[in-house]
Image 1 (cartoon, helix red, strand yellow):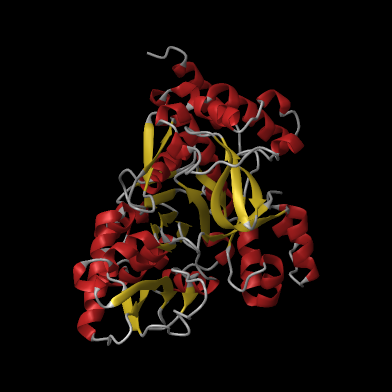
Image 2: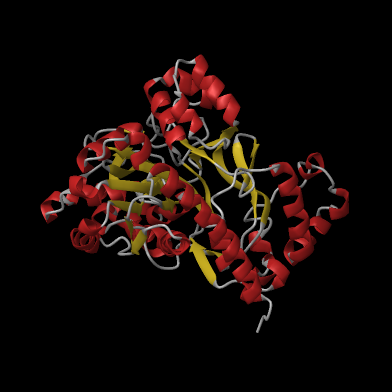
Length: 497
């Protein structure tokens, strides 16, 4: 028995219950202090520092902190026994484990304790209070993330229940990604509350909304709100889903989370960030100037005392306390950071007139924009699909004789804004595309994804698991140009097929 643990839990709960989410205060000092606490209490990190010739006592300032070596799954998480990654070298100091799929199906385990959930619950509180006014309206929260060892469903359920315990008039029901059960519980429970919030992956939530009318669900009756995570979606998608579900205020009716199994919720959309993103979607020149890309990323605000972000060669790092504390962890998501003041100044220069009500009610939090790891993975219904998984499907005996092994994996929206998984495969020289071969490739890849990738098997509805497959001749100039380094994934786009 750990006799001190109940006192720690009671103190953490008392702090969570007694305050509204505070404004960040001196985040640089906070993250330096976090470094020293982690160096003192986490055996794996102490060993990692010694192996990299770092004396923790020499790290006195934020400038010193910025010189610390980066962590990654490869150089840190997978090199040490799991208990050594936890505080005091004890996995039994945590009470829950989330599992994320690795690039070859090898799972990664992320322990956490109840007190770790409270800081993430604070991020949910900001969404529910600032976007949905759930402190004033009775709310049914319907958790549509998959339930099980994956981080989404159970973590979300726990965090929203913490809000209810804090006094928010929120009731939680967790049907998971069972569409029939979602559509069964909403007509039963929805009439008893002021609003209904669906929490899930964007393509699945859209599928639920599209299927509602046939099941007798009249969305306009429920003052629907959405909490979304796992994938970048377009503002056209937000508008279409809003129109189909009777939502009337796009700045307040939905909020995307930037989250990960590694550390929970890292940042979230706010009414201000949604307003800015909608403006940038309508002004692609300004968006390219700000983000350096022609594609529109997820745009969130974040609390730097909760998760401290940095950038490294166009990708994001963060530091944060959790069951496995992480210092300068290279999550490898493509993206960047913009301060609160710089974002407001940029918007003003480009003609976005933010009124005093919008600015006055906004939290003065910095912004992060996230493209995701498009060069490594494709995100589909919240599942990370890795090129290594697809390769195995092309190496099966019924396929390998007539393909080169090159492919391009991408997601695209069709004319109805439904997300599709597209697979373009290069045929061996002299081989011909046929309908039978196309079907064989699609089924082989799907079967290997189901075998190797637990997120794909549990997140993606069965009717959406078969990729839309095209077979192209060797050296196709668009997908398989000769003489250049091949890329196996492409960023999400909009394409009719």
